[in-house]
Amino acid sequence: MAMADVTVLGAGIFGLSVAWACVGRGAKVRVIDPYGPGAGSSGGIVGALAPHVPEQWNDKKAFQLDSLLMAASFWSGVEASSGMSTGYARLGRLQPVTDLAALDLAKARALSAAELWQGQAVWEVLRADTLGDWSPHSPSGWVIRDTLSARLHPRQACAALVVALQAHGADVVNEHRVEGRVIHASGLAGLEAISADLGRSFGNGVKGQAALLAYDACDLPQLFVDTVHVVPHADGTVAVGSTSERDYEDASVTDAQLDQVIARARDAVHALRDVEVIERWAGVRPRARSRAPVLGVHPVYSDHFIANGGFKIGFGMAPKVAEVMADLVLDGIDTIPAGFRPEASL
Image 1 (cartoon, rainbow, N blue to C red):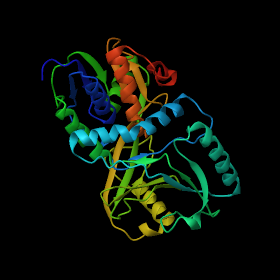
Image 2: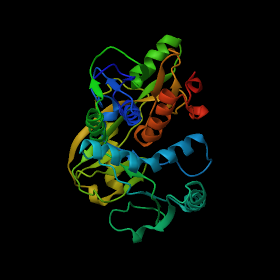
Image 3: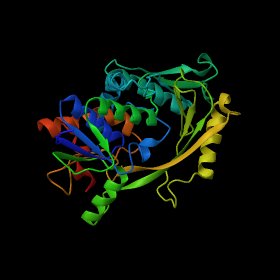
């Protein structure tokens, strides 16, 4: 490839998605990651693209809504260019309602969703006994169903993005000189480097553990029950996760905390009680001090840009993050919410 117009440092979901948006605008793009694509938390297994609750509306929730509504088009474009599956499907989500107070709240949120979700998705409360064997146990007998939640397979999505980028002439390499406009999307390492440069915390890592179970529920909705995500994948597996650990000794080791996650999933979903665990995964997700994605001008290198901090919601936010970063880097158009700017984490 000739000299790059844009260099993206980091081949996680933010870096690859921003690169894809820039390629779509005609830019020559190079992605550099010494560890390879999806080497960090973007190489996980859960892939729950789930919305915030439809209440106390703010810029973060509006941004996420836009991104979730963009996702089908975004990922279908990646699949068309790569010839690979990303595992994306918008199949919704079920959540049990614990008691009558929670039922009243769920019904109020249904009214909010009718207004805030622009008629593009539904949040509704249904009798659990009308939803079949996949529906989780509900103490109240009621279940929340939303049609905005979607799923994808994180590893497949990253792999497809790499092939799609290469098909459009982009480089995805382990090392190269930096050229053109520079976007830092280097996850935890990037947050730690900024913290070191500033002499104070800009963000940190939060460890998560998850597991893959050998059960084919590929056409069924994901579940959120007892703080556990249960996500059926298109490849005939079900992911369950995850923990959130601020303090940890080894980022790559799974332990009894994952055992508890698996046990809670099995208690909630009868179909999973005797199925085999085929993979246990652990990794560290980058969380900015603001807890929101960090987008905009780099806080240390004022002639560079940053896209980082996709803690737990990186894949769901990726389509919109890619759009606003391409707008900023290529066209100088800044539509980034105030809460996402680097100064919110300073």
